[in-house]
Amino acid sequence: LRDISQIRRRENERKQMLEFLSHDMRSPQVAIIGLAGRDRECDTGDDRFTRIRAQAERTLKLADDFVQIARLEEARPQLEDTELVALVEEAVDRQYSLARKAEMTIEQVLPEDPVFAWVDASLIARLLDNLLGNAIKYGPAGSRVSIHLAEEDGQIELDITDEGPGLPPERLVDPFARFGAHETKAGPSAGLGLTFVKRAVELHNGTISVDSGPGVGTRFVIRIPLDHGPVESD
Image (spheres, rainbow, N blue to C red):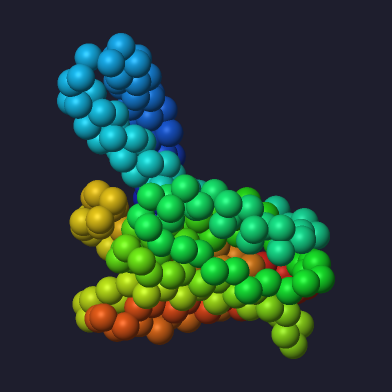
């Protein structure tokens, strides 16, 4: 009975924390972003509002990332027969302006014919956003990010490669572990993106591998069954 009571208490604490992140932490950040944006429209020439808005947006994203990862721990994907070529193209379109601002290019190598698989489209879309976004954040100006999609042996294979600085040695031990806050060329990062990516792949009974090292760029390869069986659960 004591064990059951402890489990229930921890579950209640977890729910309260999610509630805090979802509402109590998000609401003031949304208000700050709105107010900072309104003052910026007045064109006062004061860049403090721009900095305030940027930090509020970062905090809002951090809260959203924590909530997404926590919910993934107990989630089951909403599988639909999804066309993946279009899904990849849409992800590249979403990152286009960020890549252009960073003076980088995104190369797509995609099948000419449609590729269908039973996946959770929203999870795969966010997975792509995280990997492409990371590649752009860390990549130097003039470099290239490539994304390949292929269908082979009953699986889809996604290959995302960048020409960035590569992962540091301490991250290569477990590249998908939750990582502390650190700096990118686009500003501070909470280090939660790869944790989300790995969990999203696992929820599709897939695998993900990483090949990286200091100064040699990073390559992620994801394999997901086209028509997988029951989704794994903890």
